[in-house]
Image 1 (cartoon, rainbow, N blue to C red):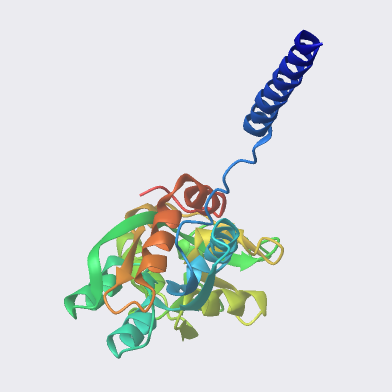
Image 2 (cartoon, rainbow, N blue to C red):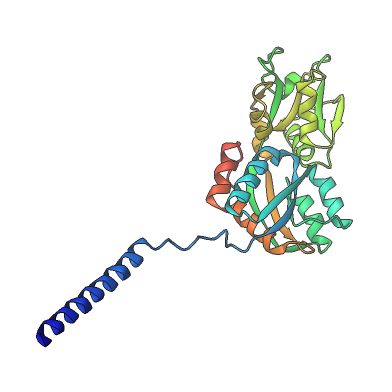
Length: 266
């Protein structure tokens, strides 16, 4: 009798031990993976001042960045680089500056408002934007000198205007524009609205507006390519977020968006 009770107790203990081992094995096999970080530590609003020509690509990058960092919100101020540099130096609160030319970035860094060395992240090149279908048969800069040709340019202090001047000087072409715009979007809009026959704009802006305009390549633009630098700002309210956004722009994901938009590698 005693032997039977001993065997029964031993069998129960063995079953319990087996159950415990099985349970441990199941916990190890079915444990949920640790959540990957939104845990980048990036939270809050990141304010980015960026050249007007970056509007489409940075808007996409901003959405992608927010998806990768759910605690963050990216807001943009798009305008001519010279105007943005002035605003920054006058104390406008911003975390990141992306300029369409080194000269405007230098205005900011010379005033002590940059944080670290700016990084060139893309290049951009001019084309002649004309109405869809190129009704006037524009093939190059000399076509813009015809007496009845109405042309829009960017003002010279704006990067697209400085690049246009350089290209026109290289071609030995003199133009009398009917309007000087404060950013490239302004020049392009004149073509879209039918107010001018052509405008010198960035290749990326023409590509973003293929429903309305054609971009005519011209050889002199190769000597007037603009470098685009980006930098965290010294007084950035969200310096951690600013550094993360710049890193994202420089990442493969950011580069892919910029390349698809027509920007060139630095």
